[in-house]
Length: 291
Ligand code: SAM
Image (tube, rainbow, N blue to C red):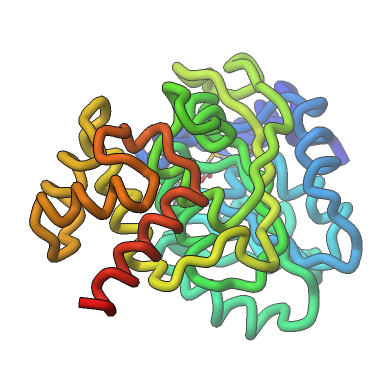
């Protein structure tokens, strides 16, 4: 069977079904088989695995996943793609197609029903307009997912793999680092897609931590602090936490705690590591319980 992830393969399927792209769904189909090979290699898929694919499109990635995995569950929102995917791949007994918005799917239930015993890996060329909610949903909900290998906007990949103090470092970097270890697999130029997007892309692999890399007593509070710390970039931690973190402390108390914890009230949030945020959150907790 002709590979879909080539310019000819994609054009042939588009013509066969008279499909036209919908910009609102972030549809940029992969047409470079070398990039596809890199995704499949990096995801390290075996016949033991169940792969969840978000946004199969016309099946450019799905086709290779079906050759390599034991089971593939693809979730697609676009009505017009469902008959194409059903016609082209529906005969494969290892393929399950879900016609839904991925953000409305109960993934825990889906995994329990469809593949309770196989290791779960997520592989996708993501719709860029909802990259962050998809990645955070996959990480935050305690799903039995081993790894997430995804095509994202280059700027997002750089953010996820950035270090404290750099321009790209942000709340999303720290939050993702809490759950997983990011690895930049490959940069992908815009001519690898049809239609050609306005941005460059990259494949990133997030290997989900089986044990937390840091342990904060109150993770909800820690994430509140992280979010607030990056809201006002270039402002001191004291100013941004006092304004946005809702810690129930007055500014004087907060200043003292920041200094005493060794973090420093004049520090800027973007220089703190995940470990620093956990330490600060625990320090605030201890202060409250001693009060
Ligand atoms: N996997 C295909 C490929 O690599 O050629 C298509 C990738 S395209 C960048 C993103 C896909 O996600 C499209 O098929 C689009 O219709 C689908 N999509 C967009 N929003 C979605 C959502 N909320 N839930 C599920 N699929 C979605």
